[in-house]
Image 1 (cartoon, helix red, strand yellow):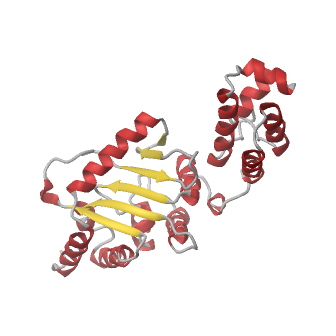
Image 2 (cartoon, helix red, strand yellow):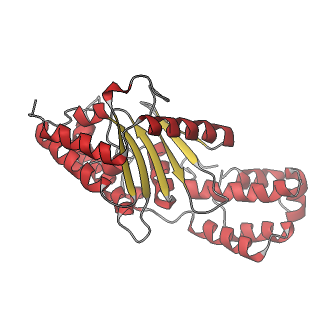
Image 3 (cartoon, one colour):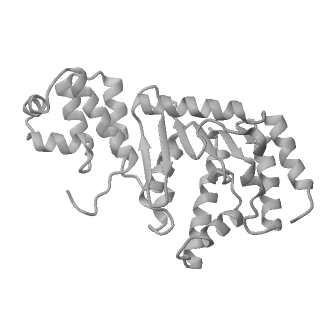
Length: 287
């Protein structure tokens, strides 16, 4: 495998589908490779997305596994588009690190984003100025070009909120994030006003976790969960630390985070009261 080859989320999905085809027939990798006249090594690379997956390879496996036509065609089309560039590929590694690139790719295909951010406005709800101030605070401070690219990347992602099939968002935001003066009073006023505008949209729900709530589920963490329209696509949890992001897709992991999100959502104010709290903060004198 080329050191420069990095499979995107879409390619990894195709690989998982091909592996699922084999496993549902209870075939070992060696047995399946023999059927399709491949080496076990090639099959392993395909199933683990360690190389590009041509559509013809999908068709070959579909034939030997006797996959029905509709499913065969779906995965075939997915393989053909797996390497198509997305807008996020216009940004260099400083603007979108690898894990974040993968998240953006997943986000572009998702139908629902559940996000819990105790100290930060979620990326899809950020203003450009807010995003730029976050980028400038990084150590070491990035160049102004990278700052602009990072902010532009976040605001470009927001096109998903206004397309024909908009991404639904269920966000729980800590009150501390609303009070943190990122960029100063002017920037934060615009950010809170934008948050109210977004929350008024039918497909966006914003709940505020008030400062006085006490201990709550998932305290000390933040995470995001993506859901998809396709039944065979499992929910994905994304957690991030200072240096990298991690994806969790195992059913027990997803279930654990689902329970925590439901708990923290229950601890938050309802959407109407949350909008009221944001207005209250806007009405307070500037610090």
